[in-house]
Length: 239
Image (cartoon, rainbow, N blue to C red):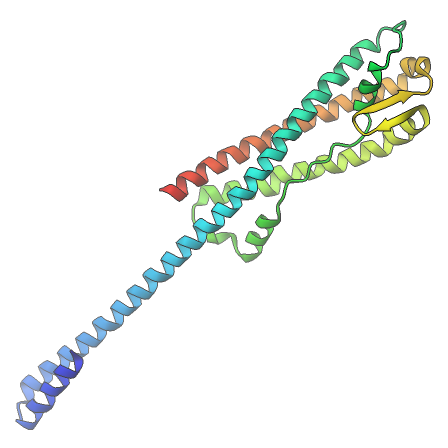
């Protein structure tokens, strides 16, 4: 088209028709400008399309990672709830000073012993944060992602540290006063009468319940946050 206008201009110039020559020259300039603007529009549209697809792919991968964490947290929550029920039973029984020893108590003693460490995966989030969270255009989803991984998962990491600290306190007592030790599963007392009436051990039981109750709350907060975020991501991706 531009070549067509150029040929006409050359012909008009040769015929000394300068008025029409300038009109065709202006038309040629306008066509060039339209071509440039169209190319810029297509380039911008394509860039936005690629950016949107990258955002959707990122959210999809993040969702997969969170669903794995959801399974991990749900399993951990069920396990901790069972432990709480066992320790509450032990707490109830140990108030009966004349209670006779039986092997079933070893399971309850074992529940108090050991660490419950749960490590959700934040590697994908760390990569996303390094590459730029602004890739996620939806403000609400971006805010939820940051809160989940920085706050909720931060509390889960703190719980893990607390579990290790508790184990540092409980471990010497259990090694001295129990045998047949299996983390969270079994502990046979060396001297049942001593254990049963030892106020220090009673305090260990009470404190273990407090810490496990705290785990249940924080696992529940993270589970709720993940479910809400997954639902919002699905709605956003499918919109």
